[in-house]
Length: 120
Image 1 (cartoon, rainbow, N blue to C red):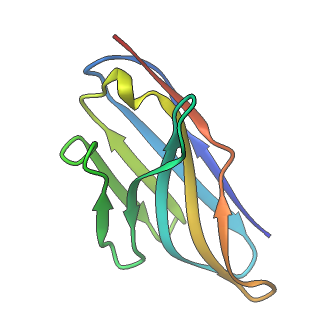
Image 2 (spheres, helix red, strand yellow):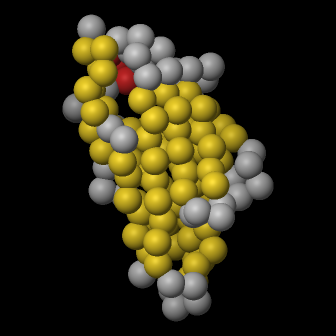
Image 3 (cartoon, rainbow, N blue to C red):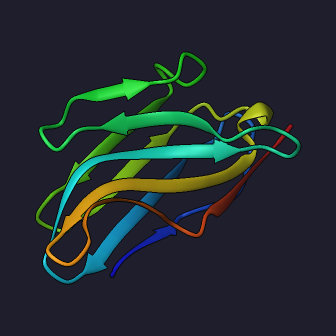
């Protein structure tokens, strides 16, 4: 079983910054692509940023230039540095990872989510 645990959410004023972390744990796994998604109130979940195992990154147009995704493969941890935050960035942010385990093979895993609230 693989677990993803997010941390770093909170309340911040517009223009401020936050860094979210996502730590993966479990037995005998390999992590491929990872990503951050978010879901605002009454909205569908959307991709914010993604990073491959080799470090290739993808960003949603709405966050490009403000957010930076990264990962530390030795620590099985992914990060997103969020700068110049806007009220419309308010959402629950979820960590996602494609993970291979010896028991279950390749699977898609999600964290429990962390709330980010940006006040105007």
